[in-house]
Amino acid sequence: SEYEIINRVKPDVPPEEYLPYDSSKGDVPPMANYFEGYRFHVTGLNHGANGFPTTKPDYCHSEEVRMLRKVMKDADKLAEYEKYLLDDAEIALFAYGSTARAAKMAVDKARKEGIKAGLFRARVIWPFPEKALHAVAQRVKAIIVPEANLGQMIYEVERVARRDMPIVGVNQVGGIPVSPYDILNKIKEVNANG
Image 1 (cartoon, one colour):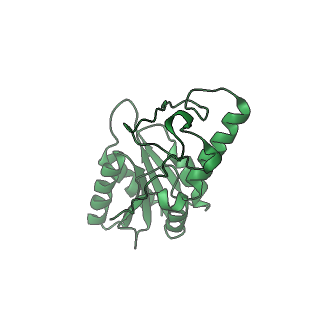
Image 2 (cartoon, rainbow, N blue to C red; image 1 turned 90 degrees about the horizontal axis):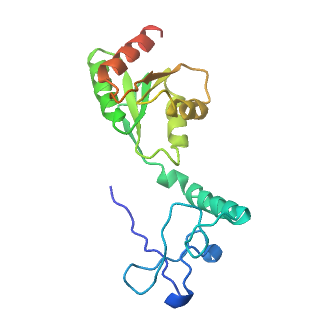
Image 3 (cartoon, rainbow, N blue to C red; image 1 turned 90 degrees about the vertical axis):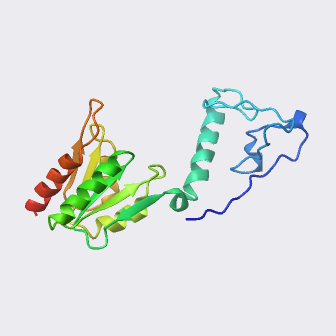
């Protein structure tokens, strides 16, 4: 697929007046290119307009709201996902990350055994692909959520499905990947329970 490249707005002030996180100009502040004379500090902490850490509650709150607004206004565009064999699926798998490979293999094996399974693979988990997953949830009988943890995304899947239906996890911890055979066994179990 192709993506439209949208160049960031550049600063309209000289380097000595530049504030890299000045949100007074909109949700996406102007950003200078590296090596063009503008200096800025990059941190993952809450930071002021100058880029240096701050703990001022009102400022931190307004910036966190701004960043959330910036993402959520384009949530549908940013929520990347793939659908695999879901058109006629009765059981959907929701998977992400490396577990999605095992899930895809389990879907293929289930199909060979006559079970109509499909995969919804979230390529991005935030923003969560709510609309697309909700639409899938309205068409299937059950959703299986394999995860390499004790269950985190299953709660988002339950929230988005908004339906009384089996939503079950296949969980694996201890540094061992989720096996496609464990997922396949859960598909068979869910299919047998109807």
